[in-house]
Image (cartoon, rainbow, N blue to C red; front, top):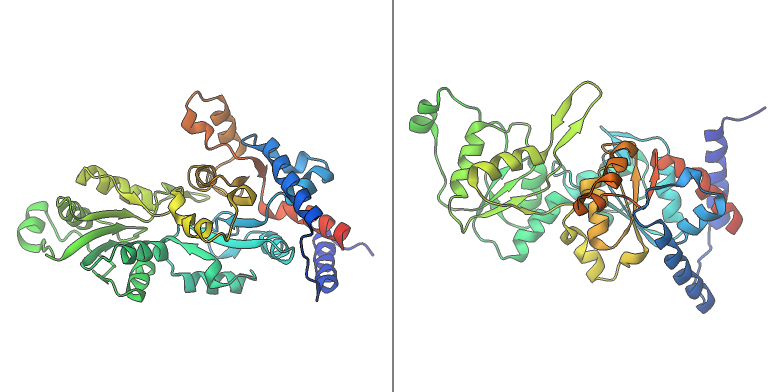
Length: 358
């Protein structure tokens, strides 16, 4: 009886994992030389948007051996609205079982690292909290490093406030702040400003409102007040409509306040600076996976990572074709090294590579 391909893949995954049990691999001098050679070979794909599915198996194997660490975006790459994208769990777990360092890096500020860990584990990913990079956590860490001792006006969610609480930074509450009536009524009767605000932090806020924008811009009128954006993702397309992203709220406040924000998340390379500084990743041998070119792929470009664009989220091959034709050098930075329709499409190549090794 013939088994479906996904069933065969699952069985092979289990068999290979059993084969690997108890084995530890070490690099010999000759292996190191070979590793360096493979890293050099990976440059042939630099900003070409090569379709991995069109490459012969030997070339895909060569590419797989060109990186030791993987940093992956979450929404649109690993999962969508709480559901794992087909094959993503197996691919990430296989990469980890092959000895590659795995990190999740998300611009989503609505959850703490511990909440993201719970979500990832429930979906089946083999991940730990220290391997999760989130903008909510990074925002709190940034303020803590600056010895910030005032209060934060937060436009966002509990993901941000809980991370601020964890490092002892005071903040305003989050939630609805609706317009109570006319502009005159709001300004004369309801607008109340705190006097100890030293920073405005803007993330995703489903309760974004005119009063919040007014307060944020007013606080930012003081040039000493920090203006921090968790990220600038513009929107989240859905099958029948579009959901505004954090970047929409950031841009509104940026326009009103006439201030430029410090952006915590992707594509700012600062979000991966600690990994690089601690020698946890070698940029030349690190793969950045994403679905959004102006955050994920651009982060890879800014950090000197290899890049893989997947078509399961925001940007598609048609977008890449436009950037290739563009005369704007900024557009060229958005072109990934390689492309897959979805991350799960890499599973057959991973299984073949593992079978050849073991």
